[in-house]
Length: 477
View (cartoon, rainbow, N blue to C red):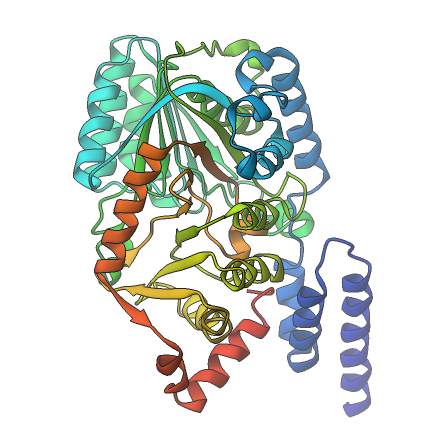
């Protein structure tokens, strides 16, 4: 029996080791993490690798994605901007970041946009409901988490009212994050009222998903588009800040921005790309319209996900960080960077950029909390400033550069956003908007505890060992 178990052990480790070595899309760190898991837990590790080892949705999904975006690029180029406009619209210091963002899925800067930073969750909901109630042609919404709480119910009822007066309403929710909503009577009520519904990455073909991909690749986007004239972008799901599914971490502190201008059409096309992939409908079924241009700032949509090229998100963040001249401030609830982003942050601080990082003091993921803090010592030694927000779970994903450039959206600085999730962001250049976001970031800092090198040095050894151990297997988690 011992010999059989030994042979089985060696077969599992050898087989999965060869499979890992044959994958060109793994970083050396990811390979080492998987080798460690397989060596320590060969049987359980083999099952984990089988379920979660692939970072893509499979060949069919890639082909469908390429087909959808080829159609969008061929027929809707008037909305996507031109790469040549980067030199005309963007300050030379930040052109590399805007050019890189445009290379991901073909959205380039478009001028003539305006934006309002929502004051809080209540203001966001009030504006959103009012905009839906004023809709005349169509409303498109996509949420990763949609709960049947007060906010989720109010949005659903607004869609029902709009559909009943003849507005075309399309609502999509992620199959995992919104699983309770999708099974709820409220979802059924929307369908009966005429709201067109779709599920992103559903679980109706679980066996195929397990065999060809992994179950935790999700659509993490938060998109709302109304009449091709208004769009919302930010970190907030369709849920109350009390976030009843994880109430002990509440309130969840989010940031949302309401946009008008040509950027709306780009966000609508990103939504439509997901809708087309989920439903099989063609672009002929839609009628995106150009929002009137006005005096306003340049901006572009940045949509990333597992069907885009590997490494797009960390490369985007590292390019943005490298463009910083004087100051860089970012907030994120989940900070598990890869080497690219970690080195970029340290490099920015070393060259004199005031680099400020804001994370939650209490995180809903103990794994992320431990992994995040494993990087504190190195970041602080480089000169970064770290603040831990203590007024709830800071869920806002923001990045500002030099009081000039802002990135806002759904992307975290963690390996899930880098490799596994579909994310939606807007990158813009404007002093007034960036000033408003920086004021919000300063508010977060005022409600935070500073973390210093002495703070980290005072941590007990067992805590440091734990943080570093979790970070070591971070690419697996």
